[in-house]
Picture 1 (cartoon, helix red, strand yellow):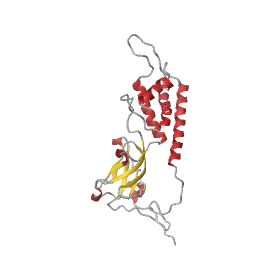
Picture 2: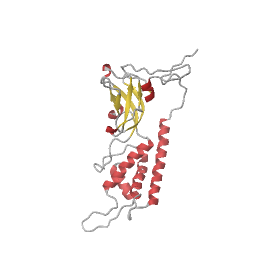
Picture 3: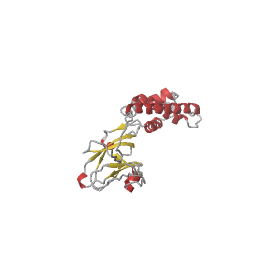
Picture 4: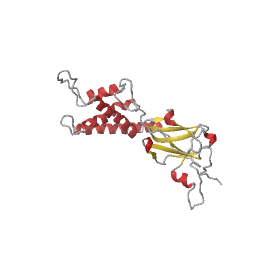
Length: 254
């Protein structure tokens, strides 16, 4: 479904905004302009993706690749990234270990038991990363990726590859509506329009407002988001298993 199809479905199929009243040479009368409806469709598209976490990406270069720079440990990711699932250096076959800010800064933990672990941060090839360093306001609050150890001159130009959950990359506008499509799964694109309908009907307007219908559209949108989240979990499900010696810990069997 492209944007033109979505606009027609929203106006005609859902809102029944089909007035043919005319006054002289003016165009057909509508409660809502194309520009407003498309703006609401764009909001619905982004909201569905954000709530359902349904756009998984490991191939889009500008989103999933970070080029290393000498002595630079902090990198603002593409603003569309909502969550980082994994990070892998180009020279490795295994993913880096995820740590948190406390481990990265304090280097070790203060256990009183008979074991401890330390985070090695020698300059060179990064082996660990964190994503809880805060966000970059200058880039629409993009996630900041911190790498440890700090890349040195031997790492310049090398790439770390990400698996991410992200937002749609492009805004939906009134331009090229017959060509532009959507990034959320096709089976939920009609349900996405329920939020756009809610946006239209929630206003206390003497002609356009219908509070009960607005709430019904909102409920269907939220139900569709829940269904999509379950579908995503089924597709990405991985059975639990025992694993020892991960996340910086080591163990010795006597």
